[in-house]
Image 1: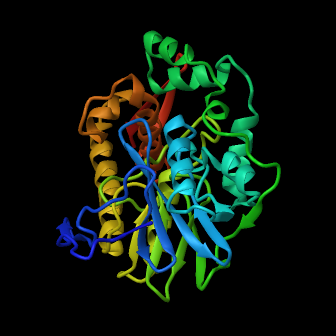
Image 2 (image 1 turned 45 degrees about the vertical axis):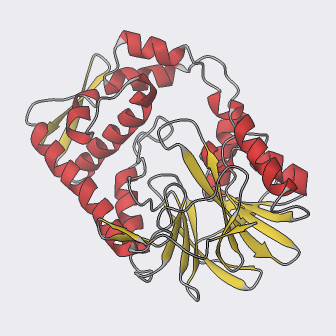
Length: 354
């Protein structure tokens, strides 16, 4: 197992955050010790995020694992190398999923089966994963087609998305165990010599679990706090009347009650300190977008018309779904704040400032 080198690069400071490892990171199939009993594995994933972080926590006769990476041959090979090399002979005692997204629990079933380990998640994340995995329809449902059209997609965009089929989630995760151990907000998990408090948040996902060790000042944040990007906050077809951005703001306020000097271990990006600085920046970014969008709605707009006000780059086909969900979340928040109203014309949704 690799430990941090004796001569470390100087910490990197950027936008009020400090990256104490100075850019050092584990390679494919390698493990870095972040602190006694906490090891870091980084796995490659497809798409713009490029990687996901997983954490091994010393747990008596083995290690508890937080998150797994996506169900890809490369990720399987990396875990095989880890458990044949630096973690040879080490058993996963339990698998903790921060949230249901496939880059975080894509290999949960595979690892649980190989190590006879229980899966540990919040109920909201578990049920969402099970619901998506159980929906075996191949054709895109009419409700989804109407949702895309309502958001402003044209015929070509709808046809491109529909050609991919529907049951994508179950194809990119391994089969989940039939049972799980439930996490709830405020729970305390004893893992080895450490006590971890569970703090849940929502907005990015339904009941995202973070793990906090206040004694040693460590936060395993999953995607609830990322250092350089704001996690996607989307409104989707499953609950079109929800207010995910409002939930996101509430979660930020909740996390600000934690100590400001925690070492944050994020799901993507490098470990950092400066939790409150980052939370303030994420909150400010979304509120500024809302204000900008409210002005833009002086004339009626569809969700797709709002991309130029919300994103700093062109949105191609691969990012269209996430961008649409994010735009809808902001528009819905303006509705909740009574700054915008929605009208439906021939199945297309139009928002205007109120």
